Length: 336
Image (cartoon, rainbow, N blue to C red; front, side):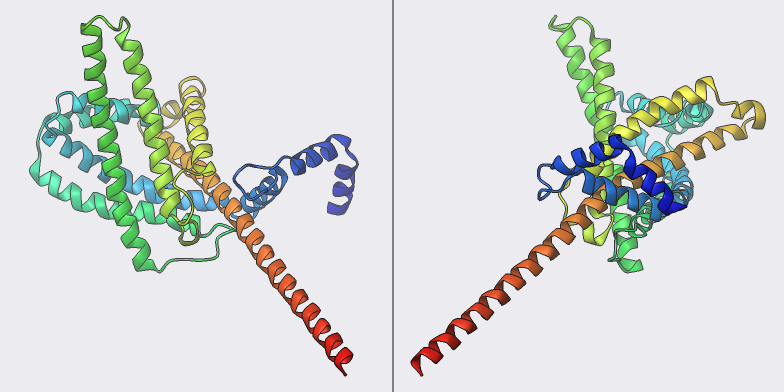
């Protein structure tokens, strides 16, 4: 049956044209690889890599790490000596969460932001670091079970790197929010001097741009240190770009789905909020793995290309040696 379907597909002229076109189009900076080669090995990794199962494991660990992490970040906010930081951080969290989900936690979030709980800070710090490390470690495990990855780290080394990256991701989040505060101050100053008219427009665009930067840098950090054999890649990769674009698209479509079509709250009541959040995290985990699979596919193609190049060089050297031996033998025969 499979051979029969393959034979039918081979007869389709459009498919042949697409394959031929894909083989002729070379991707710049990828050692002359064609679009067809990358797409073929990429789809192979998705099909044979148990993508949804790996995404489920990542989503569970991240869901468990999400609330302690937010608890620590929100408890730390009142101690940040930047005016307007609290409001901007809350706005960023609301943008990162799906609609109707952020509103469910708004009262708790505002209470933690506006009041200092030193005991809660110490508990939240310890719990969030360890649980966030578990979440990052689950991402790394999902990366290492890729069809194209063969090298793995030891458990202790992976957990140590996960803990460091959990702290790095927290610093990135705080830095982006702090930069957003100063950006708004700068826009307001420009308006006060009469150089800008619509400050709300520029503030909104600036917030959206910083959200994209936050996603891109966070994803790039995870991809850079996510797997042992991928760490030699550049910081900015095709997978990071793909994941960022898919994440933005998913935010838009998921928001539309929740607002227009989903009926979780009608069916499950307040538990529907958690179901929406779990689905949201799971979809993000799938997108994260899709971007990594692209990087892993390109890395494998490069590895295969370099191996073929090395083998070709060895064969050429062997051929040269054989040729020299023949010349020496002929010279000896002449001398005799």
